[in-house]
Amino acid sequence: MLAGAVAAEEAGAAGADRLIALERDWDPEGRTADLAGLIATLAPRHVLFPETQTGGDLARRLAAASGEPLFPGAESISPQAVGRPAKGHRVEQRCRPPRLITIVADVVAAHGGRVHEARPLAAAAVPVRRAILSADVIPADPARVPLSEADFVLSAGNGVTDFASFHALAQALGATPGASRMVCDAGLMPRAAQVGASGTVLGATCYFALGIAGAPQHLQGIARVEHVVAVNTDLHAAMIERAGLAVVADAQKVMPALIAALEAEAAP
Image (tube, rainbow, N blue to C red; front, top):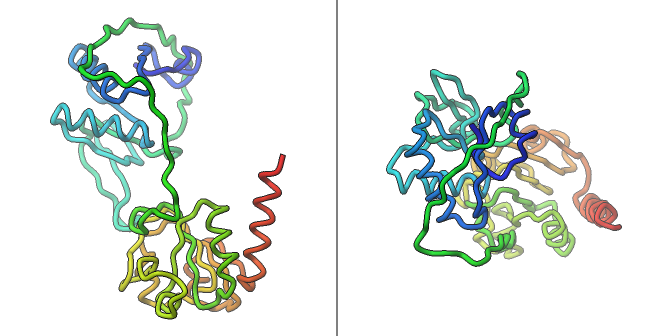
């Protein structure tokens, strides 16, 4: 069964045999109340949410309201166990599937079986105490996001001298600016921007290192990062070895080239 604002054809192709259309997409309190009512009525064995800004928030609200445990960020699911990576993808946490689970995007294969009926079912509206007349998603300014909470970090090392291009590239990419200890010691970036064991240990999805050789303390700060991109003139730099994608070039030449490419892509 699938609950949400989804067309019957899409729901059936996804493997749903029943479909409940829920209103109040922009009302998290109302949606939580609706789902709590459905769970109480239908008593499903499992309730799956996408680990997105909206889906993850809804799952956590429902867990808090119901007192039930939530397993967030699942990347593997079977009738016997649910799992997710931990400690920089070095180990996997596994347990028996609880009722409430969130699934990371693009990690579970699409339904490959036959198309189901997705027959519409009526859902009784659940009244809520407060009503939200309108709501907008306001994205955070990447330049003001703390490094510990940033998902994409662009970092400058001793090989960066053009900091005007560095900040312009960070803005164009929507990345949070970071820096090596040497850059912060020189006063070229604030101390809060320092990445490393003596600065901030990142949990970002992507780390873009410009002109950073990769001292051991710095590499400790990005041990949990999933994707690393590095630009450095030294082919044998430790950061180049750590990177999944490496460009052996001068950062002063790469930065304006990337900005020009981004501007060309954004142009109508």
